[in-house]
Length: 278
Image 1 (cartoon, rainbow, N blue to C red):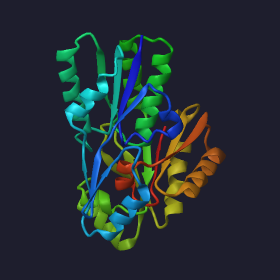
Image 2 (tube, rainbow, N blue to C red):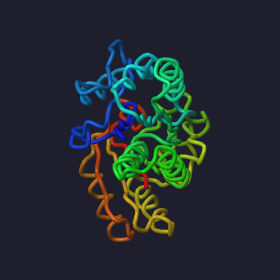
Image 3 (cartoon, rainbow, N blue to C red):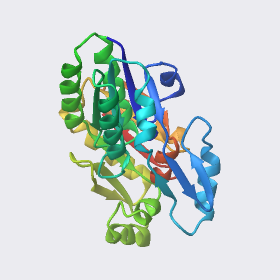
């Protein structure tokens, strides 16, 4: 059976991964300080980070249209798997579902399933790679869907950000959390809930202390052993490798992959942010 994996652009697949023709990326759009950035292969991270620093207002994001998803689904594959940002953080999931309904009217013989990653960035990447692994093995469509839904349910997403300003401005955090952390310069260890909302797990005085807490949290979770850890960084490769070193000293992951933040992850993680999933 032929298959394709359609992802939104918060799925930070590496350039090497994107060489695999099974992956199709549907871009979101970012507006910041009067400029528009399409989160595709032409995206310039430095330009966006500079623009966000200059702006008094929060950057805004627009999800792809149902038509954009429909176009991506028309690749000729018999099985189409779709991975989106958490449905509680973006309208991308809803657009993908609307696109699926349109395709079912046109081509009812095509199998389509839209996965709500209940995550973002690293979590979406791990979900997409899991789909590829299972679908490549020849597993039936329904079995892949069942296995991947279980994988998403068990997945953990943890992150530490230099600045919570964009999350606060966009209403993704309660105002109180942002005021407290802004006033005291506290760094928060954050996570995704099983439903895909953002929650606070801990706090520290410095980013490094918060990252140590993040790694300790992983090490204390027996479920991490033998899994893949994905680390996405926003303009801080050295920090990502520091996290990798800490992880390898304390945890028993089968492998660790380091990824670069695309446009949407850069908006929310901001300069210096680290997003992990396993």
